[in-house]
Image (cartoon, rainbow, N blue to C red; front, side, top):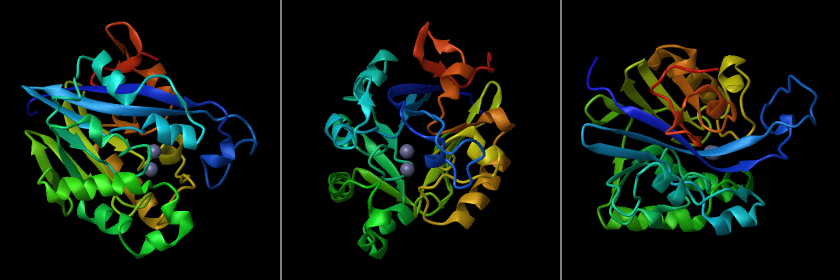
Length: 264
Ligand SMILES: [Zn+2]
Ligand SMILES: [Zn+2]
């Protein structure tokens, strides 16, 4: 395999009062049973590079939506020894409020996004309140600002952004959501982001209800499985099981190493 990298999941917020029916189009459990959600950032480092995946949500945006914040996304990164003020590369999986809500914390970074996502969040679909709801216009404006100051790179599908690290257009959850494939010592790991919120979405083929194109989301599960070296190598975007499954970084239970084998 190519050069391998360290891969981190970092929790910065959680939502404990979420219910099962909010996470699956076809509930497999009691509709109203608790089904908490974690809010995570991901980071990849090695060979002199650090790549951050998503910027999380701002405290203001979280307060507007009633989400409990444990630490700012910037602090979560600092806890792992990553300074957002000097970070050079941030992959935006998609432009939803909880993934692109902190671009200002990365003043030096180049952002990487799919063309399909930018057209989607600035196009006709945003006339529909249901589809517009997961976006904050401030974040979309920040991306357009970054574009006009040459800090936004826009791709049409698969793109290598560092040796061995590739972006993959998945779609489904939003118009142009992308996932990241990373070579690690345990094999190919795929950071799915919201292409699968929970392991149960992809394993039970049961889509998450915030969705633009259900068919593409389901086909996306196949793409993710094809890119990864096994079911534990596809890392969902919001699953509380992630922190329970992988070993902590330097004893910090809010940050885990996805490049190491599962512990539980
Ligand atoms: Zn999303
Ligand atoms: Zn999300």
